[in-house]
Image (cartoon, rainbow, N blue to C red; front, side):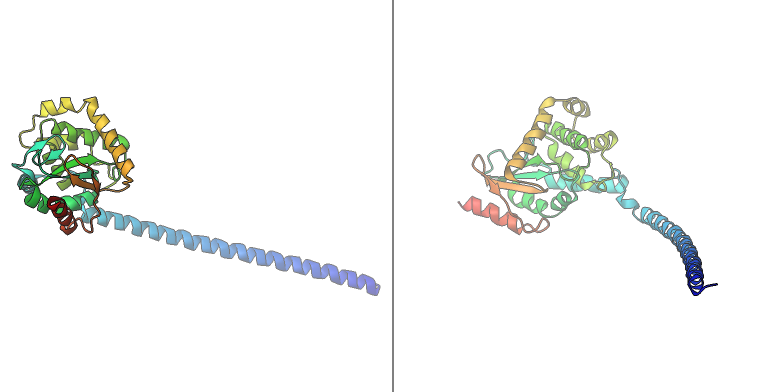
Length: 273
């Protein structure tokens, strides 16, 4: 065997050994990868079990937040709170308060908006008790879709409120809605839910209410509110316009929905002017 052949054989041997080493490395890598995949699968299974357990616990511990109308003592409590809030105050369609009140607050809200609920339970009672009952302020409720998931549902629930307004019962309806608001994104607003709210509004003729819901003028009002909100650049709820009744309005920039100072100051300023 010549030195050259020996070198060639050595080279081939080295290549074969390198190839075997490469195969071993690949096999070891594949084995390690399979082992990691098995571990990840086991870990994924454990995580899935933990997630399911958390969901079960949350479902079990959040029963009071599930969609549904108030019942029993809670229903009685809501009725008393709503009656205390708006009972005895003049109403006309979307307006709460005396028609000739010198100041008008336009309130743009979504009935499924949890932040609007904060306003209903926070600053609104103060404003109603101090200004609306005294005849200084009238509040108009306008709709703006922000929180409701489905546009058709938004339209349906707002038309139901406007239909209650045909009997001058819109404000008891919307305040009962806010008090019994379900969890966002759960699709809790059904015909049964709306019927249940209507049955809680004192003095509301249910037959007339159902018939009025199909009136096309209410769909037009919802569209007009959307256009008005768009013209003002409103993108969230609640949003407000305030001004002298029958005059021009301006945006009310509030600092809190639970503490009424910013609303109070804006009303006082208009009354003085």
